[in-house]
Image (tube, rainbow, N blue to C red; front, side, top):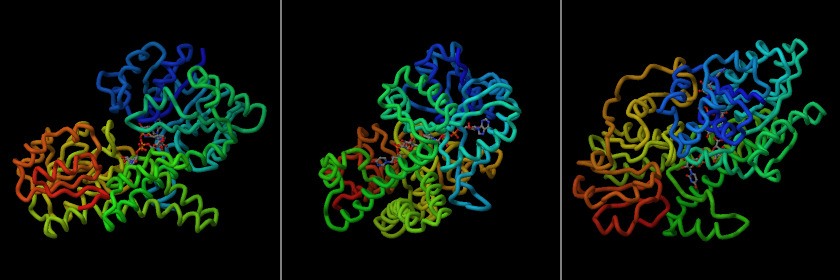
Length: 469
Ligand code: NAD
Ligand code: UGA
């Protein structure tokens, strides 16, 4: 029986390993983490992350060939293949602060593998890392090898939150990069054999290590670039009377462009797009490619502009001040079908409105009050570091309350901002909401989920992204 151990039981490690366990009954999969509370949650009925379909898969395999454990060393020692899926946040201090990837967690995992291994191992980079990380990891492992053969593979993950299980069951591609040596190719084949149990062979791409590492950063940069492009168009639409949804539809009909990822929004969020592009920018700068770095920097600048533009729109529409006004915020997660709030545009918008002294009443179906309070307190980049390294937060921030449902959030509000594309926001009783709000009642739809004509008919003053006012 092949034994797999995955270091890091997060948004990637948990779902990815659950699907491997489901599809490969002959493989024993153990997911380990330094966070005891996270492992306890994986072993409970209340999984640590919300992801449609995940609970089903975990329940089918847990205790059979899928285990969540805290004794990291033991399982690393026993494993044939070790996935490393730890967080790789943006550095907050020192060389490259604010851009470069912080590989502290990765390096400590690699050193621990070198310490405890007593037999040959395949070590798989699952985390998103800078190009050439495998070389650094190889050095750490080789210099501590005691004659053991370590093969490093790059196998970046392309799942998106909210659709992780579908993405894992039916991936567009699986990418495996390895050394072009006989041992390197043997390791590539061993990992390929795992995926081949459910992924068609033509979708398993093998490359050299550096192509694989860079392809992950490139894919995220391309995806984010599409959103910044359509968001740039949304500003122009507002200035000219064009409708960004009509423009996206017309543009996306070109088969060379395609229809996906062209939804204008209040800005992209999530733990990876910004972090990975900053990482790409840093690599370009380190290689003397200033123009290339500038090109990618603009994707992030445009995203920041889009978030700020939204805040400015709210304040300027409401007679240039929101001081003392109640603003209902519907949606706090960075996208629908997840409770994840890392780098959510809602943080930027809420902080902007609080800066103008608004009172916020926030509702999200999957985000807890505690999480919202912590997010609004934390500094940029603090979120992706272990809890003990983060500044302590107060139990509640002044002028922020969390509502149990959208109607409670909207009651007596002067304005309502929709910041996540949850399906339930499409179906709300907006007539009831209108009646309960102060007049004139404003709606700022940061996700273009509401029916513009209908809401205007009810009496709302409505602003949608990239649509005529
Ligand atoms: P996460 O923060 O949810 O999970 C990482 C886990 O690693 C944490 O639970 C942490 O406690 C654990 N950890 C850190 N150091 C450890 C160590 N030395 N030993 C044991 N456990 C340790 O992060 P994530 O969202 O799962 O992302 C992990 C990596 O995958 C990142 O590089 C990210 O860029 C990449 N990625 C994420 C996604 C996504 O959708 N979240 C998708 C593709 C790729
Ligand atoms: C993204 C990529 O889609 C995954 O392939 C990748 O594996 C992952 O990053 C990662 O490396 O972490 P994720 O961030 O989970 O996945 O979610 P996306 O669906 O990409 O959405 C990212 C953000 O862009 C969200 O805030 C979403 O609302 C926004 N978005 C997305 C738009 O504003 N418009 C769109 O058309 C699409």
